[in-house]
Image 1 (cartoon, rainbow, N blue to C red):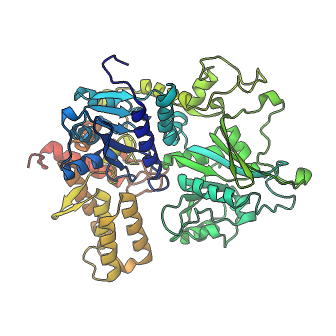
Image 2 (cartoon, rainbow, N blue to C red; image 1 turned 90 degrees about the vertical axis):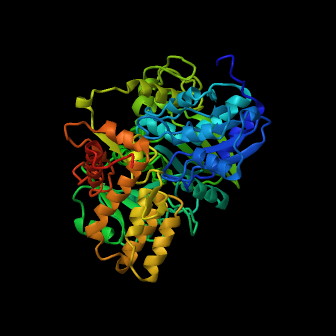
Image 3 (tube, rainbow, N blue to C red; image 1 turned 180 degrees about the horizontal axis):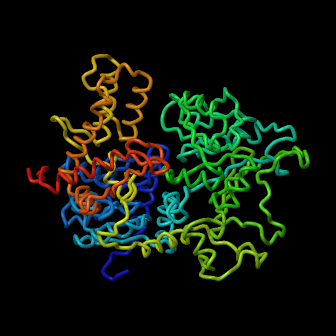
Length: 612
């Protein structure tokens, strides 16, 4: 670091650890979304304000802090030598279409910023740090390889968003494989009975882990044998999607997973064309059925990546777990060991099927191993070797790079310590950092299509879920999606419509607003305005226009992302929406992308006057 920077102090580390705790408190609420929080202190270390990012499209933590300080009249003076703390570098820059977080941090009056880690997304990495320094703010980024209190705080920041790091480094959601086995290595008896291998304390911990995930994944065998609900056992709040992988679709007609309304969404991944009548019956119950030409764990994980999932929790049997492990889907293992014996020989199933490993020195050594006790059961956590992963992480690991810079071959040595990294996420972050160099700057005539989906991802400012309030007819709406969903019920004179309208208006995030609107529309179609199908495109256009006229960031992003030859280059890349988006196969109507292109044309022609 430059000599002029103030050194990281124990108080810095203490506050950053607190910021990580605030961010992680949103797990299962912010999903699927990176976890971020912010705190502002005076020079003496006293915390002035702190805030978290509630989820996709909600107010960013940095902006929430600045707004609260302004409300209190607590803006700092340079003499206060204030410091802002963020566990994750704020979203900023050209592909973000966003500058407000950096402006908010500057508006606090702080003269120093401590950033827990650079943003993993290549188009965002380092942009906010550079912008803060250009505004005269001293910026310290915690070093992932530091020792002592700084190293501990840096590791906490990386562990808080390990799912995002792995997603970028591997091109897949961060996937955790959980299983529970007896001391003799069995997950069930030779009759298939498995309830329960572990005690109540261990099962409660599993419910908490489910809540951290965007999806819980099982195979068809688990559904047939156990008929699980796969929920977090909470009556309210976030529930992850339940994902079932089954090539045959040989599933019971009355499974608990088909109960989705008011419980949790269920996604069934299966082979194209199998049992069409049963597929239709599932869809009629609200279950989403996704067909694959060839269903494999890797294909399913790639699909979940495209849906924007960050973290998946696999609770499948050994038959599905083995190909998932072999294809690099799994990144982390949670193995519960119960102090009991069942025997059963070859008929009693084990956690993993055949991996093709013949020699013990070729076994996969887990890294970052930790042991925990839950009641009478032992939990072993560990990371799968990076060389057994996918994407850039696998490329670097296979090329012979380890955390210590050693060259090694997984099959050469029986010394497990030599064959694995230390589980510190350093190598994962290195893989992420290397992707920044892959960004190419194309001339305008050769620009590839701009694809956007999740508001937190690159180009996410174009999304109707992005956190840009809009004012329509004198009413301030938190996002475009809030306004759009509420208009379904506008002017309808019944209690359900009025209640839905108000709930949407007050929803904490656009995800919550969309859930309220869609659920009410499905359950009470009579409460939706009669002309909705005729006016919904105009409703969306009106709110998008207000956003793009009002905010320079997304407007600039739109103007620079479409060539002047008239070709459509803006694609809402939702794999589940073939009307507003391009759909899974890219043949959807892409109404949202087309609307943005039309609005851009109005801006270019002057039909929309930004100055006015």
